[in-house]
Figure 1 (cartoon, one colour):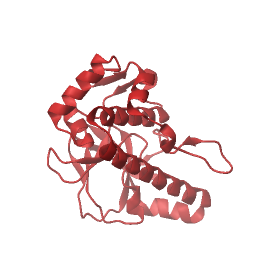
Figure 2 (cartoon, helix red, strand yellow):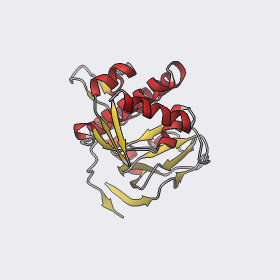
Figure 3 (cartoon, helix red, strand yellow):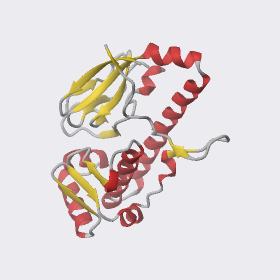
Figure 4 (cartoon, helix red, strand yellow):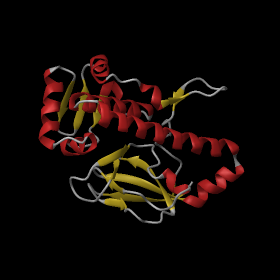
Length: 230
């Protein structure tokens, strides 16, 4: 797969609103976020984990809507659009796979909308942590429910549309309930069934089923891609 490897620092902008993208951003390490503006307290509208193609929609609509930013140090493979377009033109299976990836992104976005619109702060945070944990487990991370935290508590506040103070209180409440531990940059889910119950989390939206296949995670994209550095 032709690509170049780019390293980004914490809160460094990768794509800006209005840019015309010519490459897809495949996350290799770290976490990216989509934000509605470039300010430090801008609303986070999506989080991308290793294995995600952060701007897959730009294959079809190159103009970027929003700002793509690294939440912390991140490594990204920049893959030319033409590679995916040519591959999809030659392979119906690849074309179908790209469609499934887009559907996965839309399913996650719909659930984020529900999370913000119909849940209180405690269940918003719990639901987001459940989702991120499952997505990381899909790509071989978050073993034993221990993960490198994809965000600071300020980032968590921006993703859940609450204040940083409220986010801190919410994390403290989850700790008091013995549902998680958050030490430095390591987040450990200590009671997964309890966190799932609190969040009302159903991971079905992270999976797909076709006539030919059993259910499988939509975000099961390999992290260790065969990447040729340009």
